[in-house]
Length: 197
Image 1 (cartoon, rainbow, N blue to C red):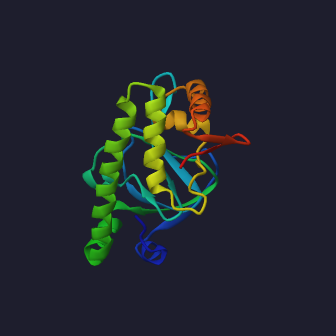
Image 2: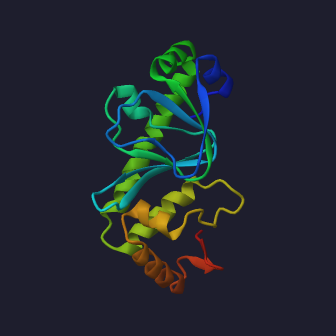
């Protein structure tokens, strides 16, 4: 969801420039702010005791993240970290609630954003419970293909490591599986870039 930058600033929003790898909030932390990416990209993930990550979502310019725990007043179930150097605007929960009260169209956009995220979580769960690496990767790519809007929709914009982090697989398994899938004609690998249609 995107709230107009000027509205956020008017209601006390503060933009911060963050380096690549900066932690915006930690799993278990108390949510105090609404966050929206102005420039760059951010990932939301969970990790286990061994440090293995499971990416829950990636957000770029114009997208917000971390709203559900903020709205229900519960601890963050994930960690947010910058993937690139970023500019992120944040605004206190109370000020966000004022915006939602004064701009019903933004409240409606938030509702649709939540509905889309619930849908995406359901499709992600299908990936996680798929029995084979090939099925996991195919479901991930099919889901991704629905959301790509660029002119080069067949270029997969994620690294092998990020695909592993989305699917819960090891990067070595992703690499081997993609090579097999390429030989079967399910994907194309050209100059180490992955393509899917």
